[in-house]
Every structure is written in C-alpha cells, then in structure tokens.
Image 1 (spheres, one colour):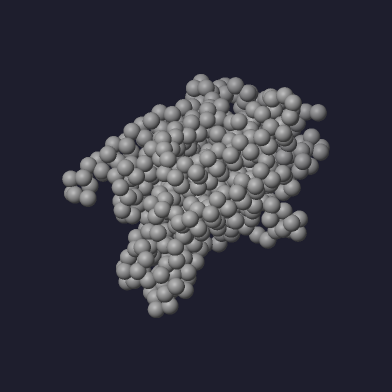
Image 2 (cartoon, rainbow, N blue to C red):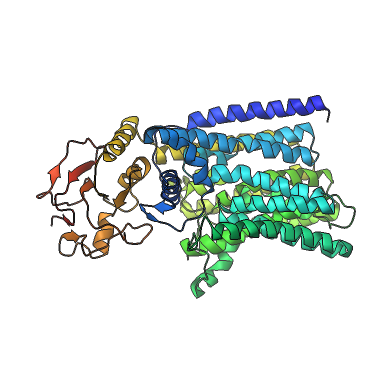
Length: 591
C-alpha cells in the first residue's frame, strides 16, 4: 500500500469515527436512569467516590469492587456541575469510547494483509455492531469492545514477529490484558488462549520451545507484575471483586454440561454459525514456515471463544439459571471476537476448502443444527446481554400469538427454520455465491439488531426531562444539608431506587423498606439506629457508621409514621418526599 493510500485510509477511518461518535452520541444522550443492578450501581458509585477522593465505595460503604477501568474513563464527566449534565455527557463519552473500536479493527485488517474491500467490510461491521447500543447504558461494554480489538491486534503482532520481538509484543499484550482485566475478569480468556497457542506451536516445532516459552513468560509475567503491584498498592487489603468464581454445588455440577452445550450452541448462532465453523474446519498445523495468519490467528480466536463460553457457563449460567430449560445468554462478554472471526473466516474461504474439509464443515453444521433443535429453546430474559441475537428474540417473543401449535411448537418450527437457513448460507459461502449480497446483509442485520436493542433501552432507561431535572435539583439541595440522609425506597431494585441512584451523588444511606422488614428491623414499628445496623439489599452488608438519620427521603408507598417529622420546602421529583427528623436515632413506621 502506498503512503498516499495509507493516509487516505486513516482519513476515512477518522471520518467514520467522528460520524459514529456524533450518531451514537445523539442516540444515547437522552434523559435516562440506570437499570441494570448491580453492575451499573457499582460503576457509577465507584466513579463518583474516586472523583470525590473517598476511595472505592458503593452505596456509601467501602467496597472490594476492583473493576475500575470503566469508572476511571467516566471521571472527566464529573467536571460538569450538575448530575443531569453528567449523565447526558456519559452518553456522549460512551459513544466516543465505543466508536474508537474502528481504529484497532482497521489496524488489524491492515496488519493481516486484507484487501481494501475486506478492510472496509471489517471496519464497517465494527462501526455498526449491535454492541454499540451499550452507549445509552452505564455498562462497561463501551470500553471492552475497543480494548478487546486492541488486544487481538497486539497478539497478532506478537505471533507474526521474530522470536525476540515476539517477547516485546507479548509483554505489551500482558499489560494490556491486565487493563482489560480491570474492566472484566472474563478477559483472562486472552491470556489462557495465548499460553495454549504457544504450547501448540512448540509441539509442532520443538526447536522453537525456548522462544515460545519466552513469549508465554513475557505475557504472563507482565500481567502478573501489574496484578501484584495493584494488589499491593491500589487494592491492598481488598478481597475478591465477585462472589461467582468459587466452587459450585453438586446440583450445579449436574447442570453444567447442559449449560455449556446450550451456551455454546447459542454462541455459534449469535456469531452467524460459519464465522465459527469455517475457521474450525480450516485450521492448519503451525509447522515451521507456515503463515501465522492461517495457522495461529484462527486457533487463538477460537480458543478465546471456547474458554469464554466455559467461563460464562461456570460463573453465570449455573449460578443464575440453575434448572432453567432456557438459560439466559451472555454474548456481551464475547461479542468483540466477531471481528477477528470474520477476518479468519474470509481467509479460510480464500484457501478454497478441500473436499475433505467441506465434508467436515457439513458434518459440523449438521451436529450444530441437531444440537440447536434438541437442546436449545430460547435465550431467556435479558436483552442487553444478547444484542447479536435481537433478531432471534424478536421472533421468539411473538410466537405465543400464533394459533394451533402453541409457543413450544412454534419455537421448534423457528429453530428448524434457522437451521435450514444456516444450511443454505453455508452452501452459498462454500460455492462463493452472492458474497457481496451476504456482506451487505450482514451490515443490515447489525443495524437492525442495534435498532431493536436501542428501542428496548429507550423503554428501559428513558425518563422524561422534567424528572431528570427534578432529581438533579434535589441532589443540589441535599448537598446544602448538614447531617445524614437516609433514603427509603419502596421495593428492591425498583424505578424509585434507580432515579436516586443515578442522579444523587451526595453520601446518602439507602435501606429498602422490604429489606428492613425482611431483616426484622421493623418488628416493633421503629428503626432504632442507636442499636440496630441496617443496610441495603446490595451490597448486602449493614452500614457501620449509620447511627442517625437527620433527613429522610422516602418513596411514596412506604408506611412512614410522619407524626414526629418536620416537612421541608425542598422540592422532590414526583413520588418522593423529604422530611427532617428531629430524633435522628429513631425512624417510626405506621401499621
């Protein structure tokens, strides 16, 4: 590629980045409140507590949560004066962060020698990925997407480099993997996949074992140095960020095989079936002198995908969907892998699959199709976890309206239609039929999935402007008050909690009425803070410093005894009332 063409390529990518930032910023900056508990509460609260210099705090209590990369990216928005302006700015910041994924996608395509047309396709798919619907949320996918593509790029540079340079790229990839780990623990699948890949290469070239061992040691060592240094300094004395990585019960072990099979089958579908199966059939042994683009990169991405599926099944599916015939799917942890999978799929098709490989592909397609029809049903609730499967969910959610067969029967028909469509797609790909049409269809499908997810997010997150402004004004008023503020919402993880969690950044204590009842704090009708230590449903621990509540912010529906309370003239959003409590140690309830 000439220098002029390189510059023109970068200009096009910069222009695309700017356009994406504006478009997704406009689509993601409407008045909204958080909706995903406990993820978004952690991100917002940790970001605010870091900005305020109070360390890691969630719900106004110390936290062990250490996935701070996304909160660190949010810090610039807190320069703005009001929380209404801050929440609006987060939409624009998310749009810029997520849109930056076009840069590593472009570099990866160039570094692997893709044609201009294929580079444009890969960058275009990146720009319209349904994952970018996360810009309207407070989730860390907006950071995970671009950083994951950079991770794949660094690993590619490492595998394509000479042995000595490979160690340097591997060390850089190790540091980068630690940054990804600060975003999501599941990012460790890159680390494990790299170690397994180098072991596989060394098996096929025993003379290279020293260089391969050095590459593994460089990545693992760089990651370990960053990890240990952070644990000894930033996170000294803190425990684990999550409680979903421990050992599982016998019942969960029994459910695990089904969870892995179901998750794997749906993952293959979410990625379009053949961007997984074709690279699998086209794998080449990494013998000396072979092109790593065809013998190593496909295996790296497939290993990362397989490990990611296993981690999701182990840490989420068996714990949150135990016994369910339709476990929720969690594609958001794997979605960035679509871009390198498409790249290696196009490379594999270039190699003109041999008759034997075509038969293997047909067999794998048949196995996947049979498994999908037999073991899978639907993807369960949680659309934000499955932006790649919006098209599947859109149809599945409406099948109960059809007569005769019933929901289960129509779901079976829908799965059979999908398998038949996948078979037709496979034939077209192998025979090189209509590839431009397929490429345009892939782009259109991504846009439609984004639109479907945006519609769901708009309904789930959106609030009216007046409510947003009223909540932001309440926050400003609360900052002028001396003493402790106790917020008592009506319902666990309900709308009234979401609004306050989003727009109040003062140090407010939160105890849900239902949680107080369940904990036995209201058996005598009085919450006595001088002797009792209540806490919120999440993080599930009591406050150690809540000895009195000078102000009570209460949601409508909470049976608060207001006899001894003093009304305030501070306006609140509809559904809330702020009271002054002359006896801070006691909060009485009616009935």
